Length: 134
Image 1 (cartoon, one colour):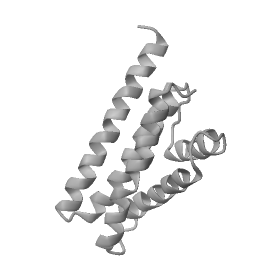
Image 2 (image 1 turned 90 degrees about the vertical axis):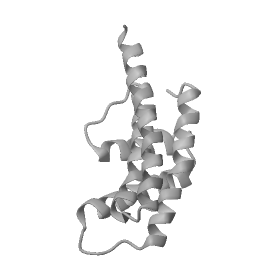
Image 3 (image 1 turned 180 degrees about the vertical axis):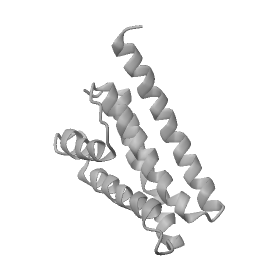
């Protein structure tokens, strides 16, 4: 197996994780576990973005590196609409709040909005992935 083939296999696995995280977000929301429902949209988007960037030969050690690459390599390069980039930033912040700022309760309406937010982003990552984004 070549390195390119191996990277593609890992990237495809991560795309699968994105779909699983979307399903998990729906399940957590239905169960009214709002902290968990709020972080799953981010992870769906993170896995999809990581998969796309990895398939293009870009690897990152931190979540902030993926976030920066989404804006630099996708939005600023014109491959991704600015609204998708902003959505990714919102999900990044919502995940941080849900995971680390336990001083407040998340509003169900806000969490419902966050659960719907990644579908377009993940869909765009999948479209670019299928098109062979480099």
